[in-house]
Amino acid sequence: MIEMFYSFMHRFLQRSLLCIPKLSEMRLVSSKTMAFLRVWHYISRAKIKGDYLEFGVYEGTSFDLALRAASKFYPFENFHPRFFAFDSFEGLPSLSASRDAPNVFIPGEYQASEEKFKRNIRTAARSAEVHITKGFYKDSLTRGISEQHKLTSAAFVNIDCDLYESTMEALRFVTPILQSGSVLFFDDWYFSGGNMKLGEAGACHDWLKNNPEIRLYDFGDVGIMGKLFIVNKELGS
Image (cartoon, rainbow, N blue to C red; front, side):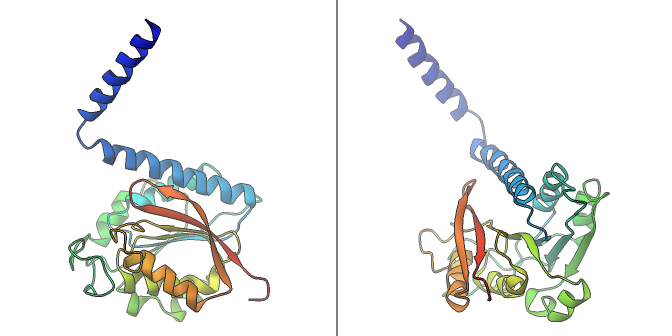
């Protein structure tokens, strides 16, 4: 009887969950929230001092999550990270037929105004130092920006660039400030439909070939498409 009851409840729960619209999207939100809490908890416990940089902020959902999750674990040793947002606010640039996943993204997609982004993060950003750099990465990710903000170390880098070239530009920009212990998050790692030479995964693969002093250690999947890594840089690099 007990086995029959548990079998019935299992089928009932399964069928009930299948009736919930957008259940996978609800699971994605939960997974990403827990992942960001886990990352900031790790950073605080391992005492990885550095800034948060997000490439591709759109309307600010992930950036707001980063601010709120970080606030649960800071300060440690009187250290507060700064938060940097990089976005064109004009949507995606043109795609590459050979380097980006076909039939997934379109130019101009994910367009949102800088004003909307600011409104959406306003509450979470009240006690944080936030810097916004507007523009397509080929123009905005310059040595001058790095020097202006005295960017010397990254604790958490969120790459939500979708496309190969945009991801490569973001990775080149953060290369000098990555350290052993930094966390890299790729929001669209699996969007290439199994071809890991495309999109964010392909850019990361080629970037690692060009930077043999950097190794990435798997820190887990996030939701449906995301991937976390912990950075290791060889001493003397």
